[in-house]
Image 1 (cartoon, rainbow over the protein chains, first blue to last red):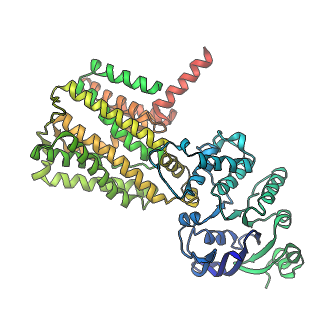
Image 2 (cartoon, rainbow over the protein chains, first blue to last red; image 1 turned 90 degrees about the vertical axis):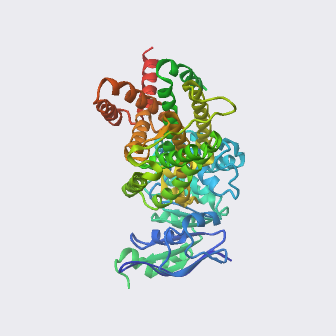
Image 3 (cartoon, one colour; image 1 turned 180 degrees about the horizontal axis):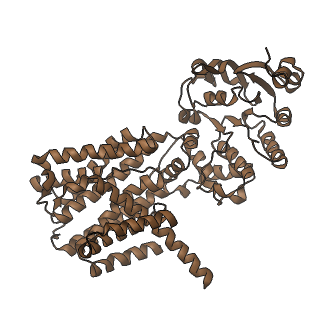
Length: 249
Length: 305
């Protein structure tokens, strides 16, 4: 069954249609990648999926429920967590606090919100620590986010998404700006998530895509032009034209 | 723990150095600063309209004290309630905007309240202020004796500090800091950012309200300035000088500000110039205020020792 589904999702900014009638089905447990040249509308699609802004038309379903137009902070409570293309952490807070905030957001009960000391939420803290451990940052829990390297910040970015115990994980270019060595680490991390989470992945680096994806959707000028397994996508002539030939039609 | 000992020592020593009324004013202003700093230091919201809550609470509680002879606990309760309520009203309008627009809105709404107080002379006394506010006795102890009132204010200040400490160490405190650091991400992980900002306003307003009532009873009058923008600016000023990055910053700021203004204003009419110089030094060299200057000095002396 499809966990996340869109029907004719469209977003226009004035005369520009950034996402054009996208119909997408993300199967539960799959790693589903969205690729496409720069400006194809991938990040806008992500913003629509997480409710950062409402679509101009079309519908969005999560677990069979229509969630079109739900604001982003409520979408997060449903179990959709995202990471950002440009590192988007809480710089002056410790790594542990960075993930703790995300873990606490998912608690159904907010008892003691203004009164109980933050250390007195053992279950939340445990979840936060294990998210840090998942990305290999457990030892740096007490460092400030602004003090760690760019590569580590990308890992933290992922940990914040994981700490929310999501059902669907939306990763926007997790390897953006990483060195080859750091990229290999990140690929291993994303591969390790396979099976534990339903993942929607945006990426530019083909080696990552072909390595980890179960299914791939290709976007071009806001529209989906192809969908299939990695092997099918590699053979698809439309995709080749989109990437190599410039204006494909 | 060390901070608490220092504060307790200061509470004991202060009335020996300055008049008890000035000593009381320092702790009252510190309560006001604690409320502001939840917004300024923890949530990253520069409110230029804190005297709205301070003044409204002082007027309403002052009126009830004067004309209806209510008791002290009730007067405090009313002040806290009015402070929170006015903050809810103002905050609701302000959190819809951000950056410069947010600051200007807090300022503009402050002016609105100011002119209501200015015009409504039959109740507020307009420019002359609202004089004749009594200090009712509590538990059979009269508070007309300045030192008695000082002790009450000190006790309430300690209570306010303890409360604020719990608040900033709670999940709410962490969430507010997360909003300060990165609003977009705080929203993305699932927090309703405007609602949390509003919560910070209301709590800050409650603290301001308590300070306002204590201020009215201290001087026996609610002056029009208590709801004016200069007063709003002073608390921001004091907090920045003390250090907005720390829970204790506004307390130190209040001490520096009130002490300077009381001791220097007698000697030199142009004393605000000194504040200006202090402010420039803070902005240029010690963004974390006195708290940061102190910790740097501490580290420096340790290294050289």
